[in-house]
Image (cartoon, rainbow, N blue to C red; front, side):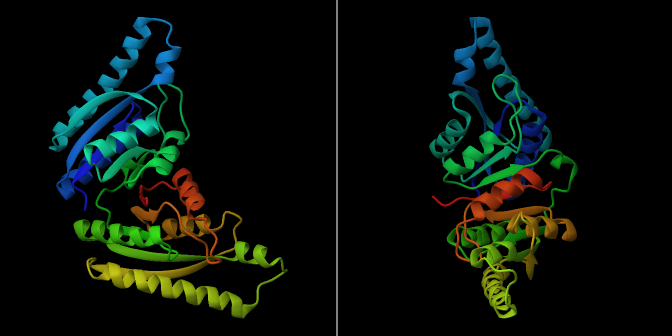
Length: 293
């Protein structure tokens, strides 16, 4: 499923940690690796001299040299490139040009001017990319990279179904246990009907629908993964589905989340995109976000 990875770096510590994860993943799945540094055109326009522009290019090349050294230590060959452009667009376009089927990025990095972003490039990339994006949070290099416990949240949507396929593929490579989870959002359900409380029968119906969704996903994953477990949980948090997933991650020591970029709630509303964004900003484990081209 993963034959060519694109790792995007910018010289930040976060990007270097993400690159290390990506290189180790590529070695495990026997994938070819391209490493890309994008110099922002905005930064070049704001540069006041040729020397400043030269320094921006030098910074991009230095970031690549650092990853080349890291790749040599890990034993993973790489091809490196510097381009000029808008980061999210440049990364997604280069991934298409190179035929990459997975992009690896850090959750937080630097702009071309050295200012910190709060995931802005990553979130824009998720909206543009036609291939899955592996997002690595700050500090993830200190955690395990064997991915023995995978979480696949599902709501039965098309992208969640695609995520199920990717979760199974990763589990097969890493001999992982896969946790298939559906979260019943009681706040959303209550708000939709504007009542003081939810009827037990209605909640039971939402949970039954969740059970059917996770069982379908578990059957598919079980064909390739060594072990699968399912769960349907409720949440009354104003953070909605994201809160339920976050709590499950903490309680079960999940190593990697594999989820769709968009989906729907138990009430049929399209919400998984906001859930994915919230989790990227708040959990401390990598997330493999499966987009739908």
